Image 1 (cartoon, protein in one colour):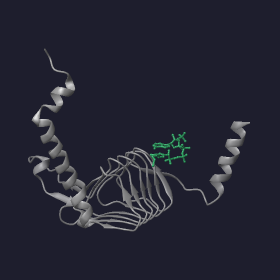
Image 2 (cartoon, helix red, strand yellow; image 1 turned 90 degrees about the vertical axis):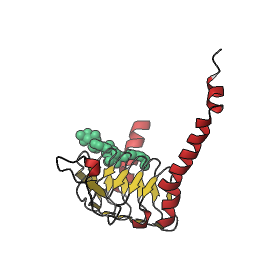
Image 3 (tube, helix red, strand yellow; image 1 turned 45 degrees about the vertical axis):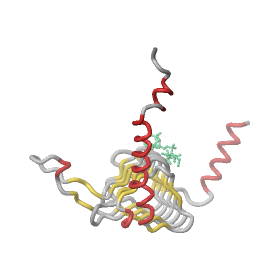
Image 4 (cartoon, helix red, strand yellow; image 1 turned 180 degrees about the vertical axis):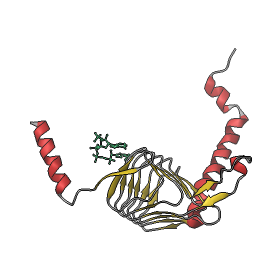
Length: 189
Ligand SMILES: CC(C)(COP(=O)(O)OP(=O)(O)OC[C@H]1O[C@@H](n2cnc3c(N)ncnc32)[C@H](O)[C@@H]1OP(=O)(O)O)[C@@H](O)C(=O)NCCC(=O)NCCS
């Protein structure tokens, strides 16, 4: 007779070994890295954010990094710096290095080229945004969901797409609230 699935799970020693493997993974990809980072007051990140080379990661006060995001500083020089009050939606990926890609040698065996990533203050990255090595994003910039940022973005811009392009700028204070009220009252009555 075939045992029920949960009995097979909990009587298999590999289930428990896998639990240890996951604990090890979260230790080296989060817990131990966070200790090395410079984290401003009130900054927070989901417990499954993956960090590397935390000694080269700086997170400004009040920033938040959403679940399943990846923040990988370089092995030897590439740093990642977030200003204050940055907001990263889930599944953002920032990596401060690229492999060299010359023909004839497997990419994974080639040296890494490291360049700093800098986010100003109040930068919002939507869900699934990728930021490649060497990019600086200006204060207040908004990057739409799914964008891949390969070049610097100016302050207060709204950028979307692959590669990310500036499609506008954040409205001046007070102006978008007025638009929202107008649309809401028009739609609701
Ligand atoms: C970028 C963003 C802020 C723009 O919002 P908005 O100013 O209200 O813009 P609109 O929805 O009016 O869209 C304006 C245009 O940009 C396009 N657009 C909007 N977001 C886009 C995106 N992520 N990628 C590509 N194009 C996008 C729209 O299709 C529209 O195109 P059109 O003018 O040809 O019709 C928003 O669309 C976005 O991506 N938000 C991130 C949401 C998210 O990840 N939330 C997670 C919680 S932290």
